[in-house]
Length: 239
Ligand code: CA
Image 1 (cartoon, protein in one colour):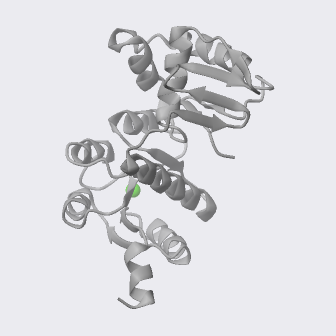
Image 2: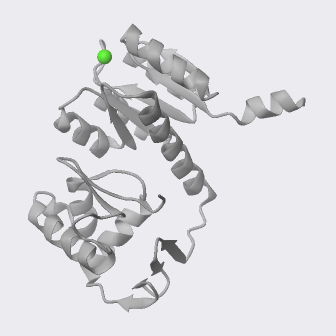
């Protein structure tokens, strides 16, 4: 195989599902500039067929499609694939984003977006997928001056042990398992406290605040335990 062909084969392949020609054009320019391989669908049924037959590395999905609801599309894809899905959503529709994330989307960008924003979200989602693929969770995780020893269930900051309650540790662990990804309040409440507590948002506020006080140098301006306003939380383990 020629060098050029080898490079071509390793370039991630992206499926863009979007009905708006202006936004498609805008994203096409960005995807070309970033040297991705990509193909387009202008409606949901067509998009789903392409996702199934071509098995892309990532789907960039508009929620407002003419024929099918984008959230339903996510649920369909999740029945058979964990391929990263980044949602393109209209401004101010927090409920749509939450629904999409709960259905299994990996992330979202809000219109109007910049090429830089979209490309950063794509890169992060592809990176997470690559890490999950390797399927070898390491026992020691470091981010900043925070160390988590997963085997011993211990956390330290700057080398000093920090005591976490079982639920604080569980919350941190869930965030870590999905690091870089937005988790909705419902997803976190369900994972940590159980399905009967998905509406108990107060728990989250209290426990996130406790975690920040124990782990962050400046809890009011966190660097790792980030809030996604109106949606949920995200753990950043890379600058
Ligand atoms: Ca649309």
